[in-house]
Length: 96
Length: 507
Picture 1: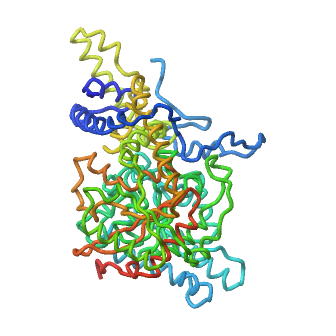
Picture 2: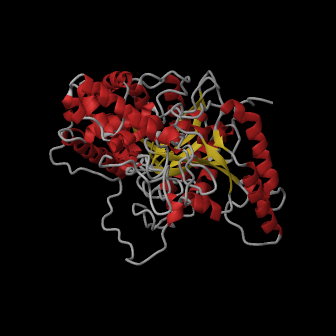
Picture 3: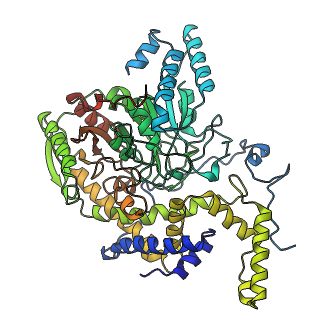
């Protein structure tokens, strides 16, 4: 599957990355090379094989449904680039 | 461990031991660059506290007074945790990871934070946003990665024990290239709580040390079930530190046909075959086995790991923590773009412009991440995107099961699998830059253990004629760490490769 520069630009938006023109060029080449390498997986017969998402296939690990202390708000906010005493501050989402 | 015996016998104090390692860091780390952060006062005050408690005959933890270095990817409230990324330059963890909490409970002296590839993505530590780490055996060469600082600090005797993480070989490969012991436990053996996530179904924390017994001791300290990590295994924890000294009787050792295919450096092959001969002389039976899907392991890994990474790293949004782009510069950029589009009469381009919030994310991430991290996020986002999910991500998950089934069949016949850690000894710094695929292929022998969730260990088994260490990799069935360390210790007791040390770098 050939990977075009347009594809890379679309993926960059999905990935929330701003890429320079030079980065777009380089990444188009590099990703195409890697994807071509990965394409060899197509030759493996996986007809009846169940996908394996985890090395240890546990299911239904439950925790007790009780109230426990959590990170105090002040500490949760301490690393935020912008916050007030109540929450995180973000740029306007719906315009001015 | 000898140092621990001296400490507990009161023949040496923790302050003396800690100061000795701090002196070694001052002498060597200017050349090696293994540490991103060392807190001398914190280390010495912890050491003094342990000495005081020992004098007062108070109960002490398993590693009381012993320095341990920690890879800069595990949260510790008293240290930075940058993951060698600009994104987390000023991040201070609000809680301790379970591994760090266990080390503190064991009264270890946490001596510093080691360098790594940014977010553990890489195999040379060259992807660190902060500094290069050099291989103590040859300063022109890479220490491997991503736990390059963790391996180099042990090799250069700047810490007796260190903690690394392994997602595709990131403990075993640098251990092999730096001539130390590195163990990746079974997935779920060690808690990932407070480990900054790269690929959650593959990441595992493990020990690096100068010998297998020390690695076993550190593993025993950090392993065990943790309710805070729902993927951690609720299984009994063997006493690795004592069991390690019991050689295996009737060991069945497997050699993988595919490991000795073309591309394996002849000196590495010779050392690994000589190691197998040592096992035979110790009474092991050797059987050639096949892992037919192992040739697809790198391709499988480089779909699954970047996919998980692209999802995990979505959290770096410039809002909750970490770097945020300059908002007024971002707004000015959008205004300039809009003006240009309007002047050109291009209403479609105006309509398609990023919203301020999206542009904030995009600039934040562009500024905070290095090129390898961007590459993997892009690769993972592509593999998970509509139209490609089945062909790449789902397909890779299926091949992953076939890889695991190969191992399950192999471990019906053998107890341990022996082989090389890497096809080549340590490569030169810069040698792989500009060729990401070549760098990915270095993981050939290590990634399958992560995909299958198996434990693996790298231990020294020889040197090239130019004096570079060669690693032997042993792999065992899930949760068979006991077999792994006992088998590794047998080899170590019969050889003296692990006792060699690199020359001093500075005096």
